[in-house]
Length: 367
Ligand SMILES: Nc1ncnc2c1ncn2[C@@H]1O[C@H](COP(=O)(O)OP(=O)(O)O)[C@@H](O)[C@H]1O
Ligand SMILES: [Mg+2]
Image (spheres, protein in one colour):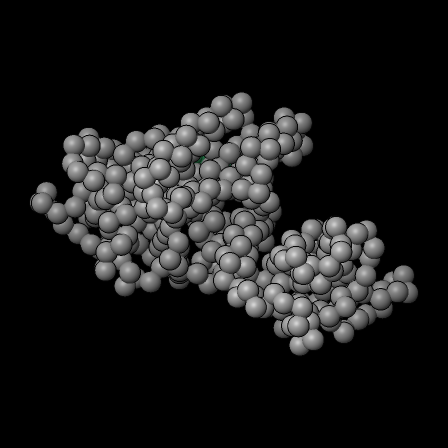
């Protein structure tokens, strides 16, 4: 199980929208996911169509714990949104918790303690997404203590860059107390690529976070607002829309890293080439395309799935294994690799089809 805090003390940068839609895409990819709404404003609760005022139990009761009258457990607090996707709702009373806990020992470890309990592990979640409030108080610290990773959503504005130092300092302070540091990722949200300012912010954020910045970018789209008002994730509201693809790409990029972490070292050796295991293959999230090219400086792939606009593969080993997961499930696709600018067919996959120019493309049919 991985616990991911979506945190930034700045309001309106897309924490809640990312919590809901990233979680919904992971669930769509077959993972069991829980969103914990840690904001007393309860936006991810109502953004998923739950009316917390009608509930007997919320995250408040769970974090407040026993000895205060009402005691509860995870199964009572959880609400199922769709198969694989659950939420623990929040309500305005959660804001009282800050004061109630502040003098208690281990007040920052309440959530961590609850997530490590037996009643939680029985629920067998793969991912827990913590939607944090817009401040650095007790609730956000509970999230950072409980999390393995933090995603910092950044929307292009002057103030968002201004606040980045503060959240980075907080992460550093938390890391000093932890045996394993929080893994940090930045995500650009509410992005309007037509503006020069947005592109300047991109450059600045990229310089600051380097490979910690997700390649996936969440563009501005009114559909995300509409989905939240309808109480639905983008998976339910507008599958295959541009914002769905943005969040889906984020989920695939995230899982791709995890998948690579899980790949045993010995699978990366040259000898496997002989076993013809480097053709396209189905992995969680889509189809993994891969090619061996030891001396290449850049390798890209273009095909029907990306409108023939080349996308970079990632170099995975010094042996020259390049990989990229494309989020496709079914259909027929022509494609080619571009190695240092040279277009070529997939050397590991024998199926080819003639194109309109009289030459050949690699051709993949997924049923
Ligand atoms: N990619 C996006 N495009 C357009 N509007 C967005 C996008 N992401 C978030 N919003 C809107 O911006 C506002 C703030 O987003 P929200 O996710 O609630 O931020 P936070 O949780 O950080 O306060 C909401 O009205 C939300 O619908
Ligand atoms: Mg929010």
